[in-house]
Amino acid sequence: MKTNENRTPATAPAKSPAPKAETLLVKDGESPWTAAEVAELRAGMEADVVHLRQEIKDAEQEIVGLFRDGSDGAGNDQADVGSTTLERYHEATVANNARDMLNQVEFALSRIADGTYGACESCGKAIGKGRLQAFPRATLCLSCKEREERR
Image (cartoon, rainbow, N blue to C red):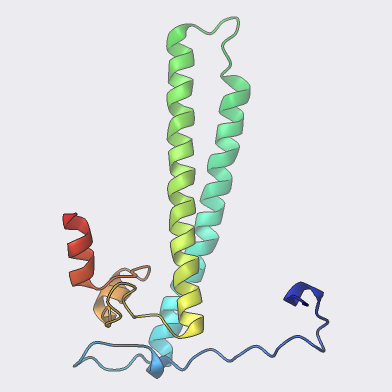
């Protein structure tokens, strides 16, 4: 069976157009998403992707520098080594958090592309435009998120 990687451009399936903004799910009483609102969300998330990738790169470079400079050798007492270890741990945490956020943003962008943006992953109901405009990476409606946090 041929995969997409093995297909030539002539035999590759045509890309489906992005869903229309008004087809994205909204709560009862909310106005449908406009193309401008979706474009604004998408632009903000795409800027977040660039920022997060740079943050990850910077943190990884800092970790490499700390490993290179912070070995337990001549001139380094236990306090210096401990401090360097703490700095490495901090930078690793920053990088991991940025990776998590990057994955969330990329997932939100893929949901916009496939037309499922705005639907709660748990119950399938609308998340709500206000919640998504405040927190575009949200995948759960408010009631499902509250239920998740009580566990």
